[in-house]
Length: 421
Image 1 (cartoon, one colour):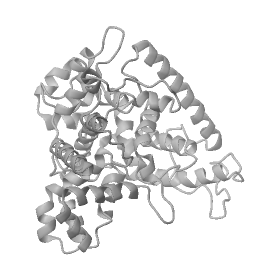
Image 2 (image 1 turned 45 degrees about the vertical axis):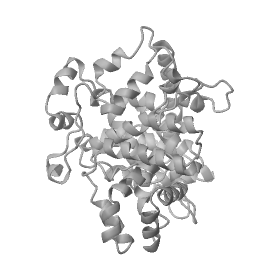
Image 3 (image 1 turned 90 degrees about the horizontal axis):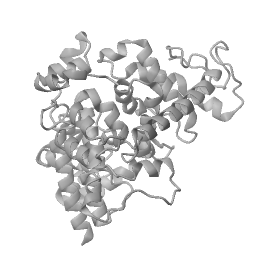
């Protein structure tokens, strides 16, 4: 992990932007084009390293309710984001001990090393600190350069994977180019390795453009590559269906349909206006949902937004459900207020109301909150879908992540109350 040691308290009081630049430095030639982050670590609100460590008991149990409260107030300090995200995304159970987590971590690292070695035997450049951006096989499925591929392409799974690797490489080159971190080929190769191994293991979806944008922050925040893989895997458990594409449909369409239903319920006037503009399918929101607002926020603000969202969506059963989906042993039942506090604000409301709509993630309500924030402009100025896209494009670096999340919670409350009637 990126560490700040004893400097954490001092850094919290220093200039927020200067501090963020020390964690996510921008290349000098890009600084004029990169919007300044709105997020700044704030003493007393942001989860600091000191408060994070104080949230663990002697044997390592985490008081997740206390952590969620702090995250929802002011996000997570950059020095500890990686390890906090591992809990928010369900890599670890807050009720586990430090010894149990270390044992699980070593087992997972060994598993990743085996998978990576399997990939490396087929394409030796994997794990070499380099990566490829040119095709490995031609349109007929024949290997172009035998020195780069040491496996036959007769197997359909192997061929499909080989066809993806150069596309992953091209996307890696385009990923977060403004950051000094990716001036290093070794860091780019780390991102390529993780995405390549993931694509090999996911027989169904493999790799789709946009996954690089989800994976990149994890690569930057977490030092160990195997730990990065598992954190990315857990992140993809939430978002994977959005990347499922066929000739006739995109996975994210189910969330767009939910978005349409939400706006139709909470703001019929806006929905009808969008329908009149031929925007009733809400395809203009495709990118926001696909890569979780990566284009609408600066890098630092994206991280802040994600941890706010994951904190608000947190369910204490997430670890058990991921580790053993068929297990009959479930985590804490939300029978009392103490247990309910282990749920994030958004998920708590779903639990209380019994709302279980599969595609109504917080991200959908967040897009709805953006539309509501821009409601007046859309109604008065939008004469076509292109105008809606332009109005929404204006939010880049001008949107407050916490305000948007709180607005999303209000829309959720309004939607659930109206949906009941």
